[in-house]
Picture 1 (cartoon, rainbow, N blue to C red):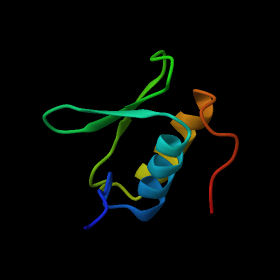
Picture 2 (cartoon, one colour):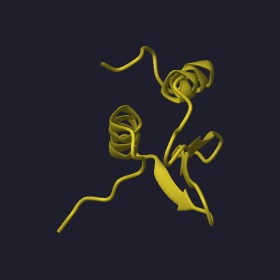
Picture 3 (spheres, rainbow, N blue to C red):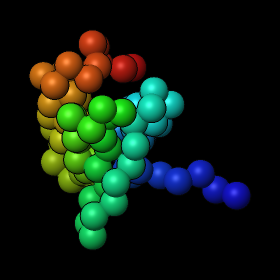
Length: 74
């Protein structure tokens, strides 16, 4: 059975998997997957197919601003 992909970008997909292991929950809308923290106070929209060359950096920066992650994963 294939594992679910949250984004076509490898870095975004790996960060999503780490957040889910930490207890975050996926919420699907019609177009985007959203991740919600266990308390439900923080919600992050996951870019499914980022086309901008800075999309990954911008998404990771958004996570850092929200205090979701401390540093950019390699």
